[in-house]
Length: 369
Image 1 (cartoon, rainbow, N blue to C red):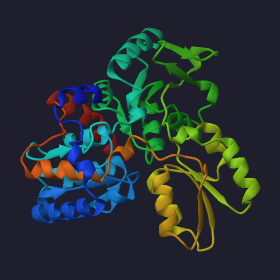
Image 2: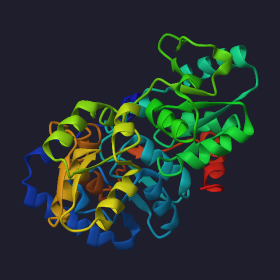
Image 3: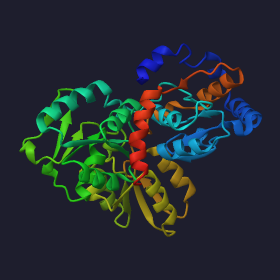
Image 4: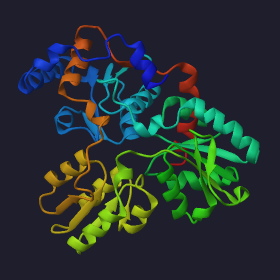
């Protein structure tokens, strides 16, 4: 089920007006009361890119799959209010039991990258690619994708990947088939494949809007088919940003997320997952200088928690992830009070067959990660 369909199917998708009239203090007091009331029966995971006002109430913070796995291990929680985006809550629902309910405080909190690969486009592309290459392709999907895409990949023998284990999974996939279809983030796919020695001219971008390749070479030499998708935040870091930092702060280390464009990753000192970025900054010596190319809420939190280091955003004009930032105190309180009232609004559910096929893709990754 797509985010749009969820929005249409939810009669109470939009925040009741009364929550807009509460003060921050009133909301914070009420949230604390509800957390105390439910105790271990309530669990609030918060993604690293969430606002500080949400992270304050999170029972755990982390990347998307990490949080879903924490939810899976938490058998005591009956209510899981996932402060992230839609595909993350889907994964949590697939990994938890039928007795546990997953909620997304704001149903508009989607992911532009995940939405760049819908199942109709993917099925259509697969048919065309099979006609072009025959049975020589294995699909991989970034966990930042819809449950329907994960199910598609599971159905066709493929696996999910994270930004932490993408190298391992691409290496595995190349032992299974001659070619990889990498969904939905072309940049993570390109950066990972290039790190593993695959030449850029052995990668071709598939445009799902026009159902065609963006490629001028010999298609028979293509080893990696990159879906034309991207993260709207990370794609906005540029080589010019790096040049400015090099000129202005010559002693500054530059670390970026591998969802950034290839040229940006190549010009940086280091790249890695959100977890790696956090761990790198934590381990860095006092007095060191860092420019970080990732989401602004996280960068600002790293700046505040490491006053012994000079930290800036690689792009000082970067905005936070807009869809992730739809989760705020009013929506969190509304979600919690709906649980108290036994109304259960904005519940995220993935059907049994989609869950079964998606877990095939997830399990293939977890066996190797």
